[in-house]
Length: 442
Figure 1 (cartoon, rainbow, N blue to C red):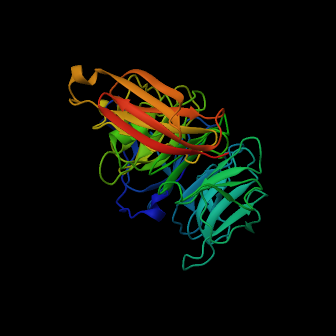
Figure 2 (figure 1 turned 180 degrees about the vertical axis):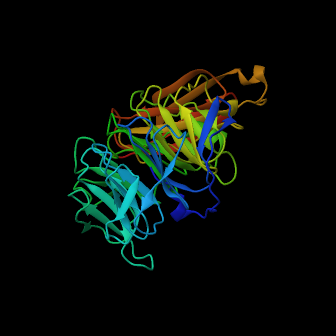
Figure 3 (figure 1 turned 90 degrees about the horizontal axis):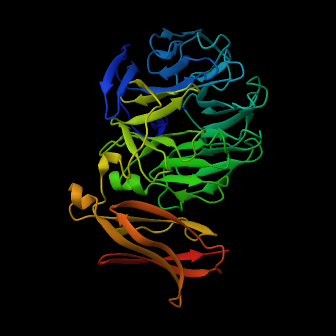
């Protein structure tokens, strides 16, 4: 995983020091294992316990073999500035570094790096973890830093093909069963290739409500499930054909959140971490175990990168404004809207997404309380009704008809038994009443 805000935001470069310290959070002590305010990439060698590499300002590459307790600064055969790391998981001695001035390669696990004299200004490099002879790079051969190109290698980095001209390709996510399929994103699009990167199609684009994407993560155990984050949190369960919003509870906590990173637990459905990196407002590391219905804040400073190993319990590694932190993946979410136990400030019915839809869409709504921070009032039950009507006013579905406490909710509406057309969905809570229009388009 790499930090992309270098190219789409302005950040401050600081002075590096090395230390191990402990900071208290709402959950437990978390180790700070490396301190600098500009880490570009974290590479966890999952087949070698305790092995982590960081690409950072000034030191370029640093490696630890003891979970970040101590570090060795790597050697280079020429000057380098580091932006991204990627290793062959089947042979962790071999790795590549996008070094801006050159593409570098290591054959001793990251201790020594040699210039390949290829692709003079690469910014991102990604080795396919399932088919490591396939490597993607985004960069430029022009010393004036442009134009940028997307390159592919099918022989482990020996030769390269220029694929897409100046199209921006970020954070490729590779399909575990097909070398042809991969996903990626630009700032405003989510892309898919079915021919190993030769051509890409947009599967979620700028027409989707001011889309801004900074993070993409494919579920390693179910490649049809993908999460995308930025100004919203999206999910698909069919390889990108349909997308759903999964962020109503996050919006209740921080309406202007910005997701910079996502990590998905392959062993537990609906369990994932997201990193928020807002310049103003709330930020930090957040965990959900019910696919976004409730969240727990683990850490309360901006998070830019999330990576993890395969141990039990896992070690989670994150890049922050102040360096790299490590924590054990032992957290649980125990309550609805556990993010600061925040109750929505007002009743609200959100526009369904996607819209138009076929045949399912997600409807989100918020149930408020006049005294949100009062324990007795916050636990009060409200009679909630959410129904769907056709254009003639006939009820076609009763989605919710029950008592619910104040909080943020999301429900999926499946219209597979209904004909194409315009429908209306209506929310009633006490004296609150709201109706919105949606379109079923087959």
